[in-house]
Amino acid sequence: MDREKQKKEYFKSFRYRWLSEKIREYKDYNIQDLSEEIKNILSDVIEENRMYKLKYLILFFLNTSIYTKSYKLMLYASDEGLYIDKPLGIGYWIPDFMKKDSCTIREEMMEGTGKLLLSEPEIEEGIRFVLKGYKDIISILWKKALESVIDTDIFKDTSKELLFLFGEYMGELKQVNLNMH
Image (cartoon, rainbow, N blue to C red; front, top):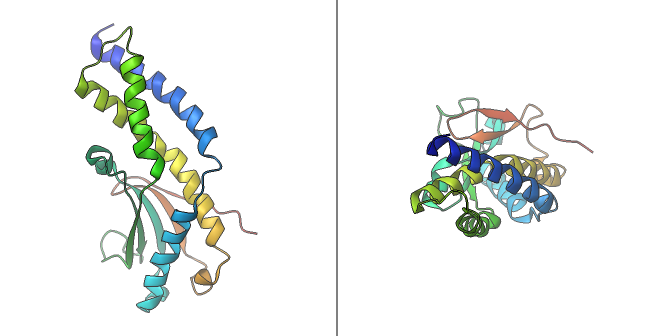
């Protein structure tokens, strides 16, 4: 097996093990910050009297933020034009666990490289590969945050056709189906 293949296999198995642990760990994560960001972006849309145009509320996973190590996700309120028209509102959420986890991933990759000695750029590549897997965890937190605020006054004037989406900016988006009470 050539080195590139070994490295990819190592990253895959590391990510699988890591994310399996983190899904359990973050299932009860405090989503208060994200819920507040949702309320803030909707308040801005209401304040500017554009609630009638609101068609999509999206949480974008920004791959570039993994490279810059800012770990930002973008909340985006949009009309039916999505990427074409100017957004109705934009906000950002930074999950506090991503920076901490990236440091722990680095430490574990440096320790656990017994059979595969990784260079610094390879470790950075591995960290990015693992953190891209956080999309699933974050999509769960997005759904929980939406469900926590959907019954509040801020949503009373939104259209019943309002769609909640999650995905990569300018990439594939998935609809989030909420459990309504």
